Image (cartoon, rainbow, N blue to C red; front, side, top):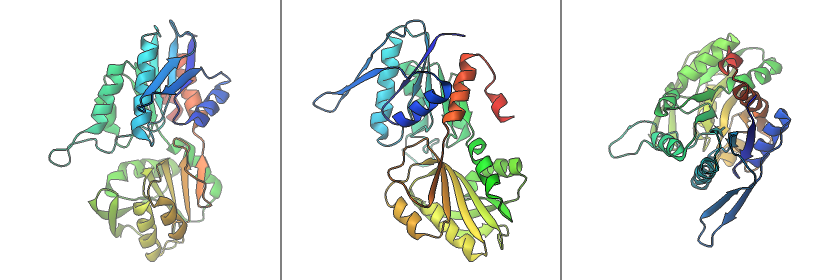
Length: 309
């Protein structure tokens, strides 16, 4: 087995510590500082010469600082003669602009891919990219893990009497259909019209939800507007209960207030992003065992895809 070390950025140290605990392996030491103007200072506090390095750092809010920090860590490790650098980004931020959907807009997912590769990463491990084609923005191996492997056991354990999977929008149909196939369930689609970013209007339901326990599947919950609006119309159409499984709990702006006062019965998320505060309606499932196993397989040159077959 090749010698390796694991380091963490400051975005989610609790997740990094949990991953290392699952691997029964210590977390490497990094010294961080700030210049008086706010610039980030990084120093790797131990030798990494000739070693395979994992950096655990989701680019969650504050996304700019967290992205810059991992770029600086990669550069420091590259200049310290690490043999290879693997970026473990449980949440890959700046992914929602993945194509030119309007005139004069950037493709930020491609820009971030360029930044990471130019800095010097040799591989990326992430979970539920906003769009699968983002893997093609990289010229290095990308392991896009599936959050469904974490949600499945939880859903089956609830023993719902009449479950059905729902996609909260047309764009998420492929993700919801894949999840429904794994559980042997039917699927419905919430058709909505998005007027502008972070604001959506639910229009109608494609499929029958009367008397059903609806499970909405999505990758990101940001302001929670889509989920709450979808839950409202699903219950108006006769759904017995509505829960949602979302991999990345961004939960910005009025998200908590919407969840607390809205008709959504439960929001199940992973810990790819640290929650700002707990909520009785939010259940958090850990992805640490999944990432620990993937990292172990990479070190041992074993198949990562075998986890999901």
